[in-house]
Image (tube, rainbow, N blue to C red; front, side, top):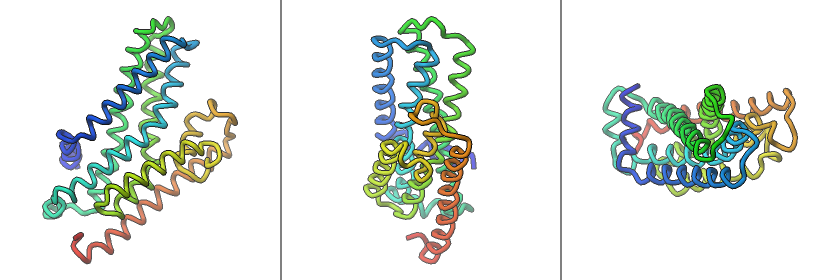
Length: 244
């Protein structure tokens, strides 16, 4: 399993995708730092909560792009046949890529923790302390571990299209954008909208009750279950033609 995860990371060494994601994150950080410098927040907590809310909306696009890139790389480079020669199933390869998405989300969020601290120093935040930094890391790790669950529908479409990068990328963009735009209207039906309401309910216009949060959690888990079952059935059927 560890070797398979290392393989997924090695795929990105010479890929433009990682440069694009790095550039987007640095531009995002620069914009937020500039905004915080000219419009100072009441506290360091206010700044990183505002930063995290926007980053949580950006993260689905990045995770979807990463997953599509590493999934379709095996079809593009024709390495899938070689991988299937070792004792590993298509289901395992799919789940390893999902695990990679979680690890990538953790890395992205931890890097942003560092960038936020740098921003706080540049903007001369007066209330930054070890406790606030620990709270920042804790919340960002929560986002990192929660947001990949919202992307399971995109993971499913990527698996079903088996090599159609353009279609998968289009679905990822539309899915992520609709979840963000419909953050209030689609909560309870759209996993991304539901998760954003769970994480940032106190920042939205209407604070969710415990009952609504339960519905949001069920909504996300339902799509995860649908993805797992659908992929298992798909690969079981696909096995008949040797995945060609």
